[in-house]
Length: 165
Length: 119
Image 1 (cartoon, chains in turn yellow, purple):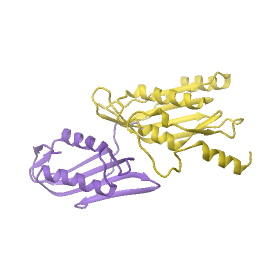
Image 2: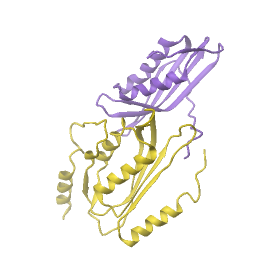
Image 3: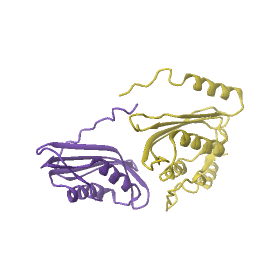
Image 4: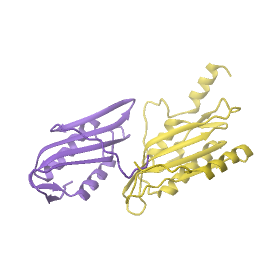
């Protein structure tokens, strides 16, 4: 595929990017997520997406929660389009979600969307009652090398715990 | 929303800060920001629980970003008697542009880290 063909194809794949009007949804809306084709599927490479403005509600008290989400993945055929990811993450604004649940929910939605080789979602939430919660979701497809990455990262997480500032 | 007044010693300089400001732009897009409030007491401050609820109440309200500092300023001045009130809001960048909105008396907003936030 030459560059012109690639650009035309990619432009057709994503509806929200560059659309004149953006509609924001305030209830959980996984249908907002869009993908485009990875043109380097023979390569293994990391993609990191940082979302510093994530907010949802406590499901018990309705008080707001805030946090940073870090999404790392090794793409296979499909890649998530970042504007659609932004809109999808905004859609949690009125959702009652425990930190541990929402990180897993987002991870599972992205796996279902992209079927990546490897994917992890790390939630770094603001403290509540002086306790901050940092859940990590991870997924690897069935291939041994990605299963090894998952195992290695799972076993080695926080060997050097972060310091409190 | 009305903030409940609380008694405090006169001539106390009080500064509050929150990294958890969230409101909506006119387009409906969420804005995140940090708010700083600074004033001199003439015998009153406001209840912090009320202030937290007030900030939380903004998360589904639409404002021009430029008006958010005034909105907070007005709510405080309608609730308690104080002097030299200043409000600063640092809004997170949109389209690569960072905004700082200031209303009222000038002051130096000291950026304090949340000491319990793991970096």
